Amino acid sequence: MRKIPSTNPASKDRAGFLIAFHLSVPYGPGIVSERDVYEALGQGTLAGIPSPAKEVLLSLFTENSPASILKAVYECGSSLENAQKLYTEILKMNALPAPEWERATG
Image (cartoon, rainbow, N blue to C red; front, side, top):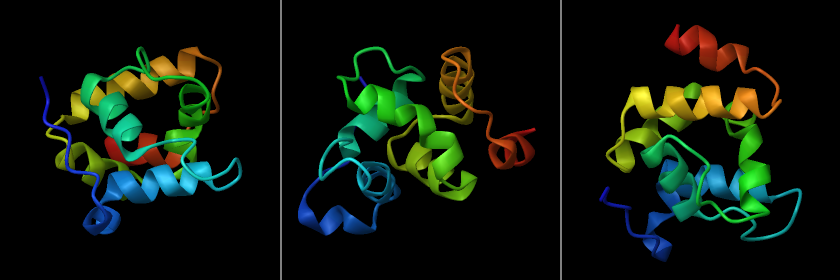
């Protein structure tokens, strides 16, 4: 099982926290948790992520910079391959493509 970084208050400089916070802003605090971000990137899938976080995470790659996403990948001990697997899954769910992500990882 992949190690999920601590989600204590000192973790506010972690990319996973910042991504979760950014994605939650339009909907309310805590809609997407840091753990949701790390689990999705760590497993390369949204399977197992509860709603409504699952639906909000469809915009992960369009709403965040490749640098932030790759930092979160590193933080949770995942890989570029798993991040790309997640991106492919999200595209199959009719999410918008993320040209910046594609340029950075192409």
